[in-house]
Image 1 (cartoon, helix red, strand yellow):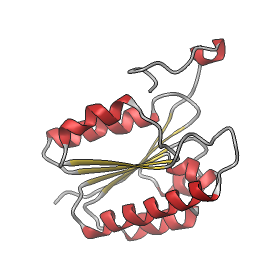
Image 2: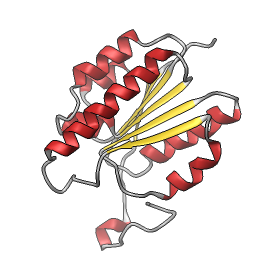
Image 3: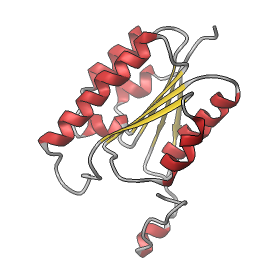
Length: 172
């Protein structure tokens, strides 16, 4: 069994989830198993359909209702995030998955749905063979310090600023 590391994809630029999915596809190609939990996401994204072809070696679950980022999270958002976090924790410590992706976990931290300390506890105590990927904007400095690899996606220019809506197959 190879050693697992902690990867963190953060920043205000596009591509954090896409990078994590790319790593998932690479892991699947090498015969590894993948679990991807998406926090604060409950909407339909095209990758949900595309990744179904990898089941059962890839499991993808969403722990959100819709995108609440424009509003304060509600009790239901908090409940879904915490239930999802408990499930991911069980997956990590069961030893049955090689790569675990916690998509948008730093957003869940930022909005206080999941405590940063709880994520740090998982990082510190996870089985040595589990590769853990964390994604999202506003990564806490403690997560940056704990990670073995940190990539910051920096927005230089984005057509969103020209009121271009999210397009099927590209942004959603």
